[in-house]
Image 1 (cartoon, rainbow, N blue to C red):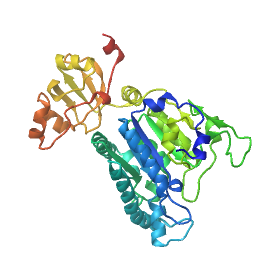
Image 2 (cartoon, rainbow, N blue to C red):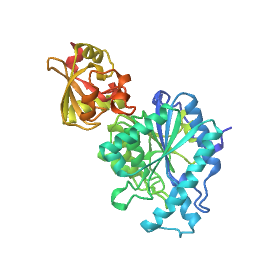
Image 3 (tube, one colour):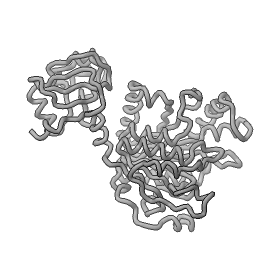
Image 4 (cartoon, rainbow, N blue to C red):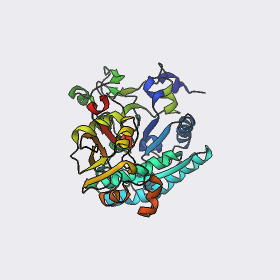
Length: 390
């Protein structure tokens, strides 16, 4: 049964983008997760959120949680004072609080037949290519195994100079990393307004944003709290990251029970809509903005497979040029030298040369470890339009 607060926010039919989303990232702030007075987890609220997550999982959707709360929980257990903490105190609080936070998610997930997994990231993990690819692959494998990754910034080691400092932008980078269809920012406010509604009684709610203009940025006031470093400004910055990656974003209130269920029921929210889907955005980026580090040449059979929408297997590659690392961009060429497109290669050059012309089932024996079956996955590949039309 919904509460009166829930009834007030269920105003309309949910946008089709919510039902269509297959992979969803949900950001949960400290102010929603922890009680400001006691420093304890808001157990009833978190239970309702995990009910929502379980419903999405049963519907076949992938869900990634980006959760704050470790510092807020840890500072209470350590008896640290209210207000700003020194960096070392914050790191100590995170080290203590992270155990409680992970345990809470694990217990709640297990009670619903789900498996929770902890992922701790720093700024470098999403900005440095090799670490980015390792993190992405770990999350992809967890989702394939139907686990619920719970991501947080690794506050125990991150310093002021090398940290996000807010989980709005971190969640947007995670959504971009995993090619999410939708990013949900659970907030203490139900969306973007023309002005901070607590300060301006004439502020109007904006239900839909299709482009981040200077006017939209100017509307972003600071809605942060003591426990939440983020404000509307960081949420709009997160929207920029998400939309550029082809991910739709929702800002909605988390101050109700079952906040994700409320979105499906047509809650009052602000939708930021991307102009393309994650795969299309990624392919456009691949096609136009990367300096290739090498080349791969295909036989006729592999060219035909690519044009039919297949991934590139090692067996179809006849030659490799250049020196590159895993995740670098390479030019894909036909056997006669025609450029077919570009892609992100799954192996460094030294290993790729050892497996070209071989079956995927032979990769483990040749390299000594279980690698990817594909040399370039179709989602990491952008073929030229002229090639596709021919």
